[in-house]
Image (tube, rainbow, N blue to C red):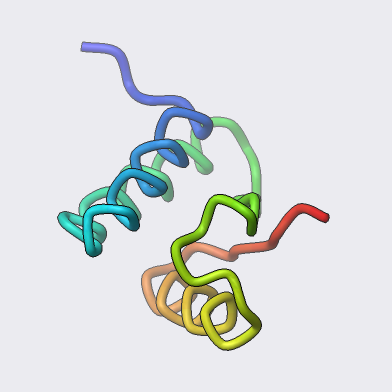
Length: 76
């Protein structure tokens, strides 16, 4: 079984966010492992694809992911 890439893990997180955060913790763990395999330090998300695309929503997402060991930034 192939390990998912950062892009695939990010897509799974977008889908989970649209599905009311279903299995979000498992997808964050997968993203963390993919980041480590690819030698990246941060996950980059497109804010226009987020369910709650306001400052409070982005900060909440960053805090939640940071508690699980993943640093999140947003593309412009």
